[in-house]
Amino acid sequence: MLDATGTSTPSENSMISQLASSTGVAYNVARDAYVKSILDPLLQEKVRKSMSWLIHANFMPEFIDGEVPNADLDESTDTFDPSAIKQPDGIEIPRRMFNIDTGNLEDGPSGQYVILSHSWKGQEISYPFISKIKESRKKREVYEMAENGSDEEAKRFARFQVKKYKHLEVGKSDVELLSAQCTKDIEAQVKKIDTVLTRSGIKSDTRELLAQLAEFKKATSKEIAARKSCDEERENLRLREMADKALKKEKKDAGVDESEMRSEIREKNEKDELSKGLTQAKGKLSQAEEQFRQAEERLRKATASCEVMNQEPALLSAVEDLLPILERKKSMTKIEGSILEAKRILDLGLFPRHDRKRYLWNDTCCINKDDANEHTQSLAMMGQWYNNADFCLVHLDTSDSTEWVSTWDHLGKQAELASFPSFDKVESPKWASRGWTLQELVLSKMTFYVNSLWQPLSRSVEGLGPYYYHCSYLHQHIRDSDIFIVPPKAESILKDCEGLQDLMEGGTGKKVRLPPRSLC
Image 1 (cartoon, one colour):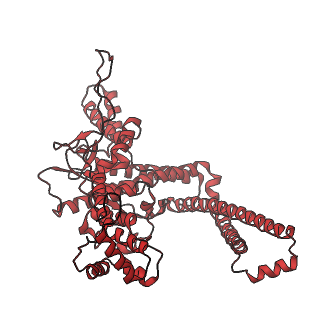
Image 2 (tube, helix red, strand yellow):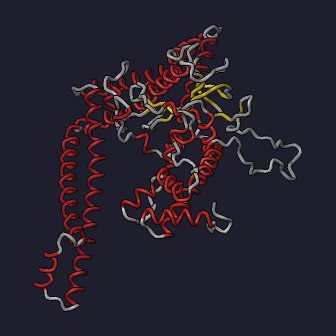
Image 3 (cartoon, helix red, strand yellow):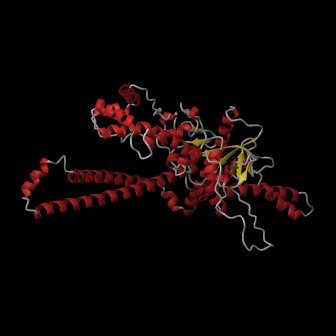
């Protein structure tokens, strides 16, 4: 092998000369091929080890000195780190998660857990929302006890309050309480809409008004996007026209006749990138203007359909308030579906339980984002949480966030059409556009995919586990796409490790065993 200075030894010089003669390339090209054949496998092994250390590191550096100098003796310097909850084996896990078997959101969990990866859509259920519901259930218990008191006025008030919280039954799990609250909120808001309709004498219903408002919002969004695109294409055309004028002026100043210039442009029209770009810019502007015209027409029709609500502000406000309620209902369905699917996978026995509790972590409601300190610490620990989870459950939902009508139509029942029937049909899910996707793919030990209906999307590579995601990363960084600029025949030989090995064996009379090139 090459010595410490990178200089080839005499025996290697002989092999390199033989290689250059056999392939018809220069000596230095053959020497580069030899170096890549010998050193690349060693570099690959180093990359493997580095990736393994980077992804599977089991420690977190300490950057903060635990001792606080000159601390007041009456003040405790011990603070509770919400992100540093550890299991008995020392593995750090999230502070709170849903118990898969009980449906309760627990603080300080201990056991095996999985992580849900999904796309956020509007008003997701949050930790403060769950806390508020649990607090309301406690109030119901207090009012139920007050009903047994001696004060009649207090008893009447308590009975009224118990009726207010009757949907939050004692004994229900947190997930069941969430579902009950979402249903209650929808019913209450629909009642408000019906009241406004009755008072105003408007002949319509909630579903029709919801569809009209949803179409108006979609049309408004499309019109804004089309207007922006049109402005951008118009500016692009203006800049290209300026460049074209500058080119003509330069030729004119150089003494080129106008007719000669036109003739010259015609002769090399296909090669003139500036002229071609100008033509393309005009075409794109024309297309953008047509899309903008269509978007304006759609918005005009949508605005006309909402005329009734525009004339009755109370009605418009009531329908507007229904939208985030439906978004929370969809989020609730996501929580229920993720717990059921996680339970199904764990019940297969692929991940040993050892009589431990089983949990699911959902970033929208398992982190208190109102607490800036907890939020920041949770973000810092996210990598370890994904790495320590048994698997990551990826929900590939549709890309449309304005699904109020669809959610309304499927209240109490499951949708009929899935976002993706199989994994090979997956195209541009909104989940894939999220910044955390790379972390969820690379750091997770195992990943299972489901579509919008929580149906499993099987893949032939699932058995590879975490190594599946490492292969493309490693290939991207150590591939031989920049091999050499040589004749096609020589290039094919230089890329063939086995062929190179045979050439070297034949040229030296002794067998030289090269490490394998393939990573996976």
